[in-house]
Length: 335
Image (cartoon, rainbow, N blue to C red):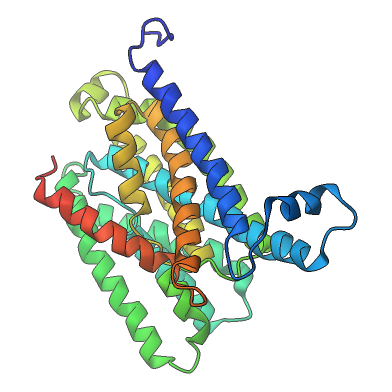
């Protein structure tokens, strides 16, 4: 079936939503650069890129502090939103989120172990986080598998594993209290201090994840028809679910390794995006990525300006927003 502009009644809504998302992203970038402990005017921002006489202090603030922080936040938002969109489609459950079902906890425990026990090996944090996320996903599958991966069992196993791994992280902070100073902000999901190194660390995972998610969207649509129909269409259901879950783990792990435990982005963004543009994953995937970036950029801007000169980790602000949303979904009796 072709989805041309003339035959798809949802195309107009998607175009408007895409334009709105692009506008919000541009607005978020401008506001996030301008707002902070040092206010930056639009003229000063332009001068950094157009004039050789740009204020060096402003140049340093924009190029070495705010831009890398904003771009890392955008990539993290993309990765978490994509991870949530994939998991919600694979598990057919709108409560699925890498933070809720334990994948982020697996990545977090592995990353935290390296940071505390092997602080000089920071380069291995991303692969360690990925292995932790994949390990958590495999454990969840092993616990929940019974002649197939049942959705409810996967979610419940993930919630239990998340609590279990969270206890290990708390144990590390108690046993190595003299070494956890650098991990406190990380555990709360903070973007302060992010540099171009963090941006270049996350970027390849974002590119791989986005390409993989777009490629996998057709399989997500087939899985949405139900396992029996998907098998009837020739899809190896278990292999497809496993590969897509690994992709979601990769995306979540890259985000966790960069900014720590930033929850609820993967829950809220795909769910709201689905309400606006529908459940067709060919559109849900790219739109979730767009609004994931927008959300984290705006949330981080709010987190560092609302209580200035104090700065909240963006993870705390997202928890304030996400927890009520999660309860709202529960009280609505999500299906």
